Image (cartoon, rainbow, N blue to C red; front, side):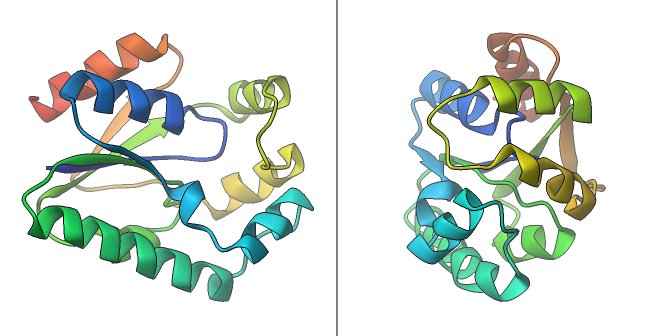
Length: 161
């Protein structure tokens, strides 16, 4: 099984994803680390990425997920995956499970403004919510109001792992 924890910036993808990976003893990957430097610089400057900017990033993520699955490995990836078309690229096969961390704009904005040392400019949150196509279908939806450990437990219950 390969789990993709998705949602807007500041929702807790990394914290929750790391917690889930640690509990399952699986590798944790952060999609932010797959961005080319040009994308990182744009985001630092508060410039939203274009679809062209995202293509090589999504291709590299898909390739990595595919390698994990081909090699019979499980893993957890924290990735915004805001549009259905992005999730379609990442859905290598039925081994890939999506977990959508859902929270209000106000809560997420508060969290983003409180964090330090991340390149995501808080001003981009509006564009993230505007871009977000709420997942439907076979996606696990988890509220981010509880503490991270409780969120991880909710995910594990819903995934039966």
